[in-house]
Image (cartoon, rainbow, N blue to C red; front, side):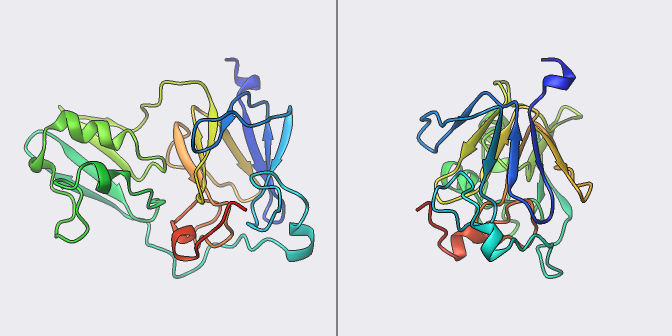
Length: 211
């Protein structure tokens, strides 16, 4: 794909998400969703046509500021004998896949909460590759791995959750924002995140609805 044809998601502090030149978007079950050359997606959380924008933000406004009490941006390394897992709470969307699929390694009720020696490196890598936000990465044999999505550019609409963007979708806003990796990242669509435009899991606490 040529650089000029790479899909883009563009927005300002006061506008919805504008998706340009993307060919694939799907819901949480994998069903295809309609895309136009330019598609507007809800960012305020109040549209009656989610995931699409219906203009409600023009009445309710969009709170797009990062909050001072957001989770701290800090990478932490969890070293094992064969693999080092890297985690950043400030990027995490709290998808929970790591905890559900490999609780022997990822257990929030223990300290440290990531224990890389409790499973095979291959299994840990498999789970890390399912993290949608970029909060998890790993180093093995001296090489750090951050990008690992192999499919075409796409957006997945997480059920009652964020936009999950994959495959090099360029983010352009008026704040100079950049994700950890364009390979995969998550954007808030509930309006509650304290780390906008990125998701921080507040849709869970606030029981965000797709309706």
